[in-house]
Length: 142
Image 1 (cartoon, rainbow, N blue to C red):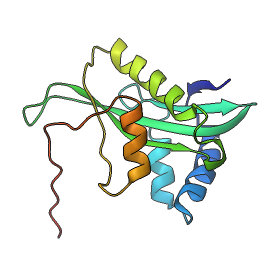
Image 2 (cartoon, one colour):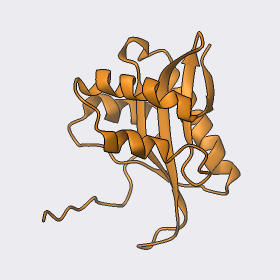
Image 3 (cartoon, rainbow, N blue to C red):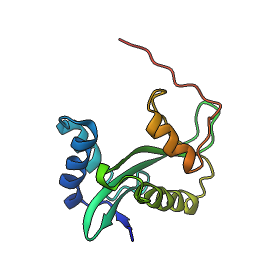
């Protein structure tokens, strides 16, 4: 059974360790600080998944106000699961909890962005009910 609870400051080292395994590399101090900013912020909820008392996953969301023709919405900014635990319902359990929080706050549309060639993430998001939106991500390089 997977337990999902709110992210705390003491979870940051475990989250960083999971991210290092996922990315097969370093995790910047800026990335760690970004995670810390979600601790206790109701508009930027963060959760961890625990199995046997050990952090095995994390999810970070954000509530965004109206803009660009979009009503107030929820965003799934980042999700990560220890690769040894993938396929065991950890990600789905965290998404369920994040969506409950958004629903409690009156949010009905939840968005995320994913690289077009991240087939594993696209498959995961489709499996939990995401579909293409009417938005296109744009970039301007300086």
